Image (tube, rainbow, N blue to C red; front, side):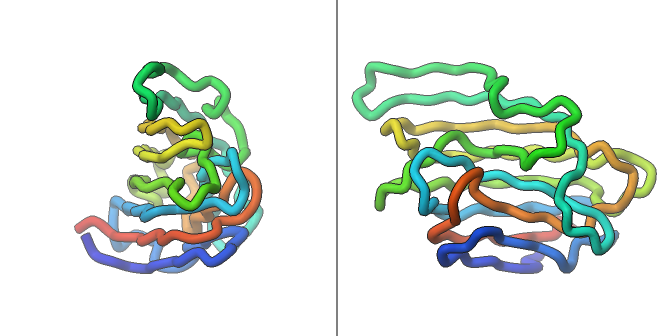
Length: 176
């Protein structure tokens, strides 16, 4: 892994990566370290764009499932999450389940984007996130899909589904 950029949240509306996404690497990894929302009951999400565009509305198809266990040990499960997947949607893609904004609640994980500079193929991605929810649950979320464009991706933006990112760090790496 080659560290390319670091963004640190401080009551941030968005965390943007607008440089270093090019044909240098065929795989990029974003590592999330203790992302903490300012708003209770929200999700970490991302969207991408091409060229110098900043509309962040590329078409995404995705699938999402999760495993969870509550603190009391009396509720757990594994299931598909139709509420946060997309079928040719242009919204920001959720990559975590609902987070709480308590001092001990945050999300950590990784997002992989493959061959973003390709002008031949769609852009595949997958994410795995672990978070402590607003319902006192430990949740492991898995997301996979593709961005339906053959135009090179040059930008990635992260934000909470509602409110700001109060604290946390995202690191972007190129994979050699």
